[in-house]
Image (cartoon, rainbow, N blue to C red):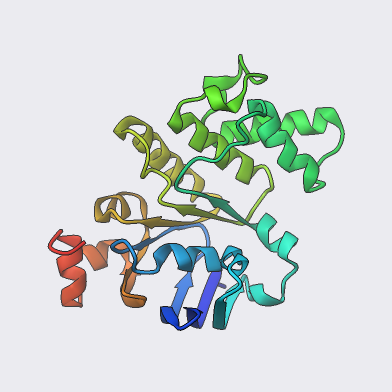
Length: 250
């Protein structure tokens, strides 16, 4: 069974058609990259997967998205967003909360743990999973706003992982980071896909080639090509894909 199956998905904002008949299958425990130039619909597609896009009241969606065989549009929204975590382009920790509380707050609010020792264990586990625990273990009560950009992004990943999702969505998670911090996030993605299905949006063909197992190329709301990353990059079947991965469009 696929982790996610997108079937005949179309999306409009009013009269503007943003996604045009998207059909994709995303396997379990892989990194699946959705790549394409700015404005092609890739971030919108990502936000459909945990229904964040529905916060816009002008949106019209048709088709279906199945999460492990169940339509996300028939799922309880709280349950869906626990199973499908989201990490955004700009790190968004709660700045006035401590590093510890950023993770603990999510755990408590979602009823995952109530006893302090249980919360402590989950916070430490999540920070270790996100490869940031060693950086912050001596200052867990420090405000999250004092972290570097890369550390903030890994804290946001820890916060998402603490809810024990099955799928982790990442919307250009390294776009605002320096090369060293970006490299650490890419290394983390390689580790996380061993236990989670990771779907990453990127405008960088190089990043898609480095971290993903499968890739889809979006252009003007259409899926132009998809498949195993190695095959798409080494032997693209569409001229547009070839131009994109070689940097001639973008």
